Length: 223
View 1 (cartoon, rainbow, N blue to C red):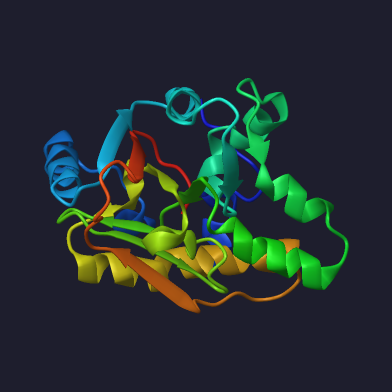
View 2 (tube, rainbow, N blue to C red; view 1 turned 180 degrees about the horizontal axis):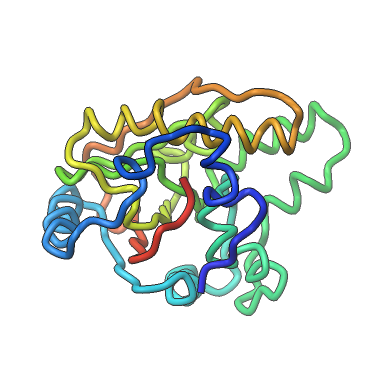
């Protein structure tokens, strides 16, 4: 079962005034199957799970014992219980995010953030998935998606099937018309400030075998 937090989409979408019928629905099984095949044709592994709990277990299986792990801020990761998993840390991962937050010097902390995008294992959410196979991420500063194209040794993307849309154009539009307005609500409540899209990354095709894995969950998660 997914963990719903005060910053889950269900608690933000009313104030965000977004079109949930268009941008936050689970496609039929045939569409999901077609999307998975399209993603895998781009040299990106797909692990399908039915639930958030199963997705968390998949993470445990994918990441080796003692690996260096870094994650971008992600509502989807929160909803599958990744924060609690890091606290329990059954495989003794080296939590690079904890190293960053423990650093009080702002200049040193920023330098660590830049190093974090090159972690052995980097975890991130996804803002949109085109049924044609492209994966799209967007954020304000690049801290959540800077690892996507090259930096991370291994990249694990975690997404609910509600992120699937028909085309790449639709995926980009989803970033602006759905993900951003919902993130605006979260940012105002957490930081007291607005957000914006400063960076967009499109994974068109991965060149290195086994570097990128998408865990695709059959639930509506994140935004």
